[in-house]
Image (cartoon, rainbow, N blue to C red; front, top):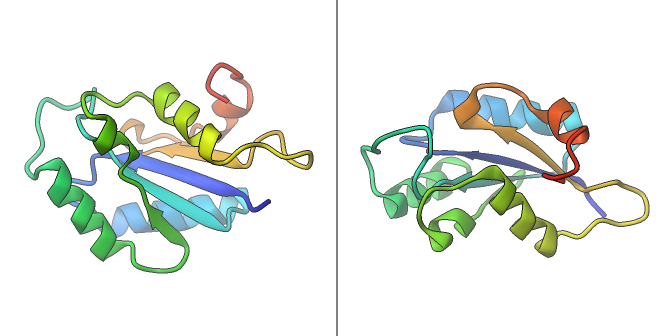
Length: 126
């Protein structure tokens, strides 16, 4: 089973820094795919310049390389998006196998910090 990284944020708008972080995430954790997840409503921001649908479409246009996959999982769910809810949903779509504790790895864009180590040590999210 291939390793999958998830990268969520408001992407309002997506820019070169987002792409660089996503590419580095894939490189650091050995991911073969990075799922880009624009949030419906960020719990860290009061508003967005663009609608959720517009930000989703911008991500589809911007992250067009094969490395990336764009997910509307948080937009479909609506409301404020929290990591634990999204990871729980994704784990159902991408179950673990015998070789990996989990094939999902995460970077939280809105937190501006790499939380790979934190996730490895917090089973409530994994």
